[in-house]
Figure 1 (cartoon, helix red, strand yellow):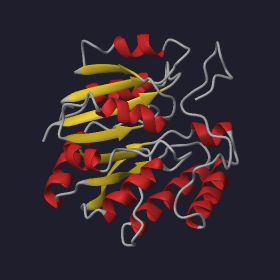
Figure 2 (cartoon, helix red, strand yellow; figure 1 turned 90 degrees about the horizontal axis):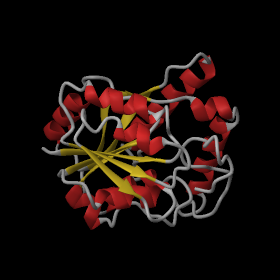
Figure 3 (tube, one colour; figure 1 turned 180 degrees about the vertical axis):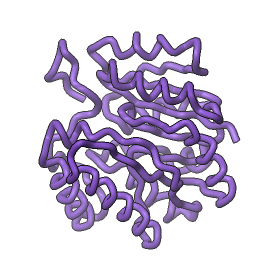
Figure 4 (cartoon, one colour; figure 1 turned 60 degrees about the vertical axis):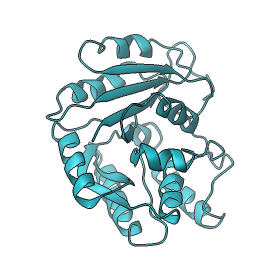
Length: 246
């Protein structure tokens, strides 16, 4: 298996560094790391390029805005037969890629997601992350499997599904897992957790309730969220352009 790790990022200077550093420490190294710079207005790119001598790095400049477009454009430069899409603010434990490869191979998984661990000073956030893990596992036993933050697909499956749907406002990763299941691909979850960031929950205490609302909206609108049901911005905040659009 050749693994391409794809990281879309916008204004992630100082954040994506932690993810890239964790990739240098993997017991099973990535075969390719693709960073898709999605209209950053800070020095994200310089932070990423600093790892060019430690990682098999490919840098892509996104032409279109939005995380789905960034991921899709990055996939066009991916050389691996397994695509692993990760958010720029997560961290991968040293054994993650080795465990990922072992589980995907043993279970012949073609599309899916990963469980998370979210260290936080706030008990409510830690509990919420555990609830999401339970929800992720539960949904694999229904006709509507989901994925979030850390999504994988074989390149063959990803291309046959035409990638992520850029017409969706949020939950494009949910949609990929659902379409993969309906197309007959083997969909499942990898139980070796990544380390998720609590920054959205710290910055916006109502983020958890937004997520609940998003779930309810999705299930009552054909499993698709195509309009802004609440404010959502990709990536971090630029110090020079805090109001830059996605």
